[in-house]
Structure formats: structure tokens, C-alpha cells
Length: 453
Ligand code: TYD
Ligand code: MG
Image 1 (cartoon, rainbow, N blue to C red):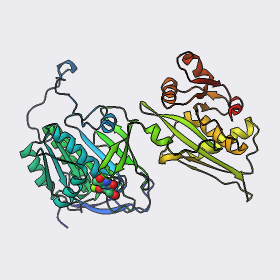
Image 2 (cartoon, rainbow, N blue to C red):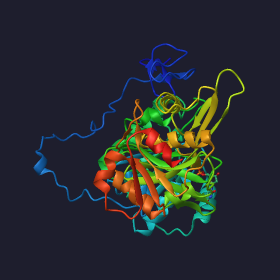
Image 3 (cartoon, rainbow, N blue to C red):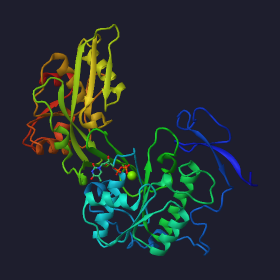
């Protein structure tokens, strides 16, 4: 081996570094994720190492903010997740399973930005120019401000960007890029890290905005986006059920905005379409007057979304009752069932229970507790809850219903969607009295709320 090189083992999932192979990663607990890589001693890779001039510290008031204008992508759902547009010089990672729509989304962003007279460079290491054109044809008309490049060599890419000086650059995907100075294969941890580092220097140095696509992989052959999460400014994940056409874009990290925001899209034959009213989508096709079905409200970022929860409670056939949940924490469901048994006297000990969240969403907010409780009660008693009722509230261990934040927004959303009743915590009721036409039913414990089933 060449002098100065050494062998390192990297976890391809999280980038954990080790001098010997291990079966399980101590960092992320993933099995069989370590791969051998040869690394050269670190070249001067630090962010501003290339700057030779002397730097002097400045005070906050001396920093010019005029240039800090955000660039809108004119895709409302994306702009919101980004915190109100793209910040110049920022590096945005778009992660997600293969085939979920990352390339489509970025191409649509290219289209909008190039219409806005921004120069955009789309670099693909996965598809040929013809393939990109085929995709672009489905999306719509493009103008001359968008330039395409099929390239995987980072040295060439760097030279092109430095010469062309575009406003925005798309890199599809980081796992196909390689730096000649690094001997390991494209997609390995050291390649992915070093490539991101080079892009980071370009973004900060030239003030270009760079979007990076990162595939989430299960097999561990290529490094996942988690390896570079800490290096970039913003991390967005594309989620969604492959069988459903809805896609959620979730902000996981954002140096320039809130991270709880989600954007909702629908994959159509002309690309991704924004879903402006997610509540309507989530509630479409819901059975009316069916036992076990209730509507809850969860606040994602700043936006309230109405979602249906379904529960099915049946007599168990075996000694050990079976409980499953989809989209909701399994332990939370078990806990709420224990509360129902102890505080409301329901005999759930010999019942199977299945609780589902419709629409492929995942929710963790405690405000949906009361909804889960009432859906279980409704299925257990085989009596439907009025379909025009919205339910929210957190449930405590002694069966009390506690107040939740942003109650006003939730009630407003219910009213907008045409609901007539809202079951909510008594503590939230006081502040909302007289503000809404919708009937507000305050409850202080789960026994009271069971009157509405
Ligand atoms: P793509 O953006 O290639 O996914 P990724 O880059 O995340 O791997 O999306 C590919 C999927 O989207 C593919 O299954 C086809 C589908 N699709 C549509 O349904 N409509 C469209 O207009 C486009 C462009 C793609
Ligand atoms: Mg792609």
C-alpha cells in the first residue's frame, strides 16, 4: 500500500469510524454495516483553509444583512419547509427512498427558478441527458436558464461551477459523486463526506445554493444521508407510502427555520402537485357512522391537519391478546388501553386491538391521545362517534384530560372543514368561549368524554 495510507472501517449507515471490523455499530446499532475503506491522511479539508487573507473578528452590528434575501422556489409546500425560501450559500440535503420523487421535485424546482430568471445547473450522475429530458417532458416547458450536466467527477463539477457561477446547483445524487484523490469507491463514507465537503466550500465560497440528493438505503452498500446530516445546513426527508400517491416532505434539520414543518405533495402523471389542503386529503374516503373511526387534529409545525384514526377491538382467540398499531407509537396505545381499563372500567384484557392512522402518516403528538381512547371505546362498544366531531386532548395516567397547545388553530381548522362539534380539554375551553360557532364540548377526564360515543 502507498505510504501514508491507512485502512479504516466505516459504518455505512451513520459514518461511525473504527480501526477494526465490528458486527454491530455502537453508534446506530445497525448490524453488518461496516465496510473497509482506504483513506489518505487528511488534506487541508477544513472549510476556510483555502482562504489565505487574514481574517479579523467583527461585531454583530457590522454584518451586512442586505444580501440575506431568501430565494423563493414558488413551490409553496417546499418554501414553507425551507422556512420561507432558500438562503444564499446554503447546502440542502434531500433524502428519501429510491423512487420516491427526489429527482422529480428538484427538476420542478429547476423549472420554477429558471422561469424566475435564475441560472440553474442540474448535475446528474444517475441518468443520461435523454432520460432527464424524458422526465422534463412530463413536467412541462423549460427555458434556457436551466443547464444540464451528466458528470460524477467532483473535480470537473467544481471547475464547471466556478466558471459558470450559477445561482442554484442540483446534485443528483451525492452517492454517485467521487473525488479522484480518495481511493475508495463512490458511495462509500469517505467519498460521500469528502464530496460534501467540497460542495460545502463551493456553496459558502461562491454563495451558490446547492441541493444534494441522498438515497436512503437499507442494504448498506452505499452510505446513507445520515453520514452527512451534520455537515449540511438543511435536511429534508421525503416520506410516503410507495403504494399511495401522497408524499410528505419533512424538515429534520434547518439552520434557517423551524424543523417541524411538513409539505404535502401528490405524485401525478405531470410530476409532484402541491396539496394545499391536507386535511381534506387525509379525510377523503372515510367511512361515516362506522364504529371505531374518529377524527383527530395534529399540529405539524405551524399547520393543523385533521386525520382519521381507526380502531378495531375484538374478542381474542388466544390467551394472549394481540395489539398492533400503524402510524402511532405502539407503547402509547398500550398505555392508553391500560388507562381505559383502570380508570374507565373497560374490560380490555381479553380483547385484541388494532389501531391505524389513515393516509400513511406517522404522528407522535400527545394531543391525539383522546382520539385514540375514543376510537377504542367506540369500537369496543360498537357505537359510532358522530362523524362531524373533532377530538383532541392529552390523556394522563389517572384518566384526566389535559390541555394542549394551539387549541385555537385546531378548532379553526375543524370549523373550516365543516365539523359541528369539537371535544376538547376543559382547560382549553375557557380561552375559546364565544370565539367559534362550532359546538365546543369540554371534558376533564376520559369518563366524561365517553358520553359522546
Ligand atoms: P424519481 O424522482 O425518479 O425518484 P427518486 O429520484 O427519488 O429516485 O421518481 C420516480 C417515480 O415517480 C417513478 O416511480 C415514476 C414517478 N413519476 C410519476 O408518477 N409522474 C411523473 O410525472 C414523474 C416525473 C415521475
Ligand atoms: Mg433520482
